[in-house]
Length: 210
Image (cartoon, one colour):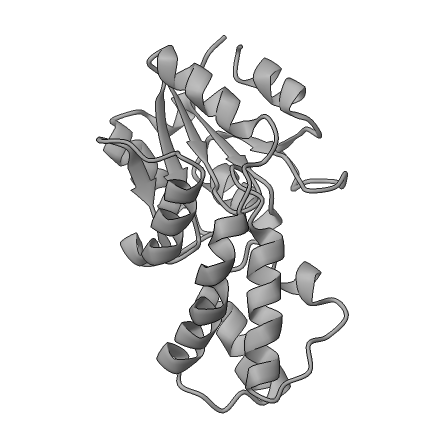
């Protein structure tokens, strides 16, 4: 059965931007004289900018104010957006649901400038589109607020909505919001208890009633 609303994470779920974020983060770290750890990818996947900054500051000795640090990272990231690709199958599902009149929103832990740049690059940008960035909420994922904000804007009860995310923090946020939560990781892994784990766009189609 098709849900009343589907709320999508962006980075890693709708668009294959995680490699770009990691490349920008590595470049920014090296630019600041820091050595990226071998497990950097696992440590920052789905995590908002401020907790990543705290890790850089507290564990790696970053000696920059947050605003300076994040601008350095974005200066490395934005030129890479030209090579951004959608996640195979994801935007097709988004557009099918849109054609059916299902309410949708993009719910991201990224800043507004990154959300807009990414969605424009893959052509997922139209009048009336609902997007929630880290700038639009007090508490980002894994807190429920971003997905609850999406439900509020879509005028849909959270219990009638589906959250789709590729990271543990995102899936935890969907579960905390009381939504059916689909965990679609980059590579097969267990998800948070209560999440529906999938590994393909075809599985996603079935879970959203297409």
